[in-house]
Image: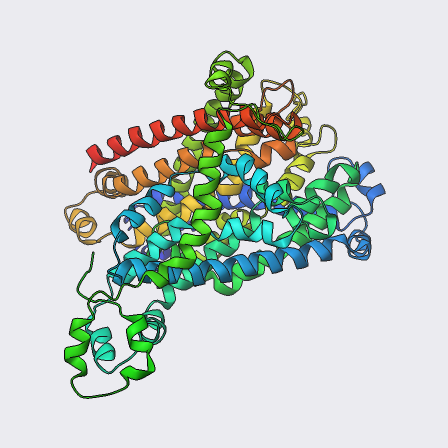
Length: 299
Length: 313
């Protein structure tokens, strides 16, 4: 990083950015240089697997197997990508992933915001007890329930259906809790006025509380989507039909079939990685802020 | 907890209760309006896909139910006593705890280091954030595909690097004493981004006054890091550590795909044993019993952490 003393001093204050106060590395040059070096080294280490995968994916299988020390030596070709896309499975799985993660997100957001509003403003009997049970359920790792849940799906005859993949993922006690806490913080005066004007409770929820909660709802939606997109164990257990598989599950089932074809497996890995990276680039600020507002995320 | 704003959805959507005089008085009286309707959809999925399997699983753990044979018999605590004497339960538990130990520590410390460095005000915030957070966005299969290639015995990056330094190749996933470390390294790379964001968010919300005062008093960067910033992050560290330990205890996906628990069961975690027993061995009852024992352990860990966390505050 910076090697001279003067620019260091000049740069000390300005880089406040929009993101808050910097650590104030001090007037000393040493901490600044050390910090910069460490940052670059860490970032390089974190990017190497991606770069290695990209470099491998744009070569022929033959070159990958023979170039020895570096995949950067072989001739550039997009054959692997073409073959992956022509085989068709990857696009079916990508479609399933979008459909399933999208529906899980939609249903979870609807069900959870409604429940959070009911828990926050409702006065029905047993509200506190139900809320306590919901909060307690946050501790239960869903992975531990796969055995009885699978048994239940057999009973309902739902194995190998979209519903079986989607519905159990809609249960998100953590999200209900996060939303409820946010709703609790919204002042009630606005709603009172609307109620006095005769607005139905659903109207109050839709037209007053929900618009005020857009950042938190977006945060919840983003984390539910990432979680559902990446969920492996449950979709893996409940789907056998390749046409119903999500990307993670589908790729796992053919991993062994690819055998030594590293260019193709890297190409498919990168194709599968692309959608969420794009989502992140589009919503970067929102994602970072959402962690700050919710405190916690993923399941 | 609010009880000041009653719901009265049914009453008010009733067409009869249009805008009329004396509405206020009426509204006052419909206090019992409940809001239960709002909670109902959640209760439905919650009851069906969470409470039911919890109860069903507990019941199953006292039976010899299996996927092959639907007829189940009550066997009392047999499954539990068998689990206590089952060496595979203990070895998979040991593997899980070992993985948790070697993954949680770097997942907290590296995340902290990343957040401190990115927060220190060097240019290019978003690029660093993307570099550290991007792997967290990848599905597990993609992560394992990439790392299978890095760990590949002859052509993989790992052994090629060692070779270029004149060192002997390592059996990243095939050597019993190395495999779990390889999986932990992959896991740190993959998931550290989330902890990093939690730390970054915490750093950005810290008050700068102490820091500035100390700087005026001539405290150097290191001193302020140790005496001001890190102590201010203690709550966050408690939270991150707690979430991370619970997450690491639940490891399954990447191990199942990478090594299927091998070589020689040296990387098989508890959840994979549950999966193997239940879905490959068809012993749902026994698998449930092992699940519940593990769940008990998780509760104990959470309670202990909660205690420690409380005292730190």
